[in-house]
Image (tube, rainbow over the protein chains, first blue to last red):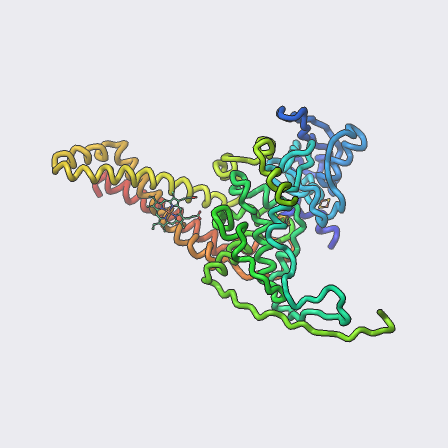
Length: 278
Length: 157
Ligand code: HEM
Ligand code: SF4
Ligand code: FES
């Protein structure tokens, strides 16, 4: 199974190459930022590749053997931390989740993601993006929650059907690929973007949450979710199957009361603490 | 404090370095599939129809000048270029209205699917074949309407 996944691209298509199995090297064109205000340049490196080489592997190879000064950000190398997003051959992708052969090209360009300020080379600044996320109050709001000085353990009871209503949105790793692909984000800095709006839906669909986010300025305003025109590009690039476009349309239906928005808030169940284990 | 920080983030000096894709973001419809093309066409056809609509009001207002000025106005559309322009109006209005009806459903949460458990390779539910067929139907009907218009205008059929 693991072997199979190695051979598949992020879009599930079998990785293939025009040059066939014989292709064992590629040219990497990497964006390098220059002095502030100036346009960056591209540095090219020819590097050897294997069937399993990812773009992140290729970049790390360059850093190890060719030019250690290239700025990149990564951590998990397994599409979990969301830090290696960049524009690869013109499209936002995770470097660690993109097999070089899948790109079917002997030249691969790596650029910083659009719509994010560039810090250096391929590293972008996520402050605006995360601010939009923060504005959505991305946490359970429920007056019943007793987090402090609670003599008892308590939990909200939620069945699998209710969990499935928001679960896919909670798989978001905040990688920003959707934000970079969105044509509305491209021109409107106040538009929260697909990631944040999908999270607003994620919490409003959660039966443990009793807070209403529908009235938030970031949602229901001139620059809010009405700016989405369903170009679907966010969902196309999302590496985790979050499908932010789905969340936005469902949120919109709910706000307009066209689709059902009533939910039964989950019950809080109290457990008595066990003095022996606590 | 947080407010001040946020304000700073959106300040003009940052604005120029923010690497936003800008107009190119929507002017280039390639690389993201049918939904992106449909979004681009909806906007272009919408803007085209807006320009046409203004022209159309101007044209019909010539009626107030009597039948003579109305006929003089009509002459514009009776040239080959005039005919081609009208065929474009037929095509864009067909596409825009049919795709627009699809979007009215889509953008109110209908026909986009129900959230579930994503499975590899994580194809997005909302980019489903109901949506794609809506786009294709709008495109096909626009071509059919244009062909019919061509036939009527150029061959008198
Ligand atoms: C039956 C007729 C029509 C229907 C069903 C329709 C539907 C729509 C819908 C649903 C949208 C929003 C699309 C989105 O969210 O991206 C839209 C956008 C637009 N429409 Fe129409 N429309 C019709 C006729 C017209 C006419 C006659 C004009 C011109 C006078 C026009 C001009 C526009 C413009 C300029 C936009 C904005 C495009 C954008 O922001 O991307 N529409 N239309
Ligand atoms: S919704 Fe998908 S693409 Fe967007 S930040 Fe989350 S995981 Fe990344
Ligand atoms: S390195 Fe963690 S997502 Fe790529």
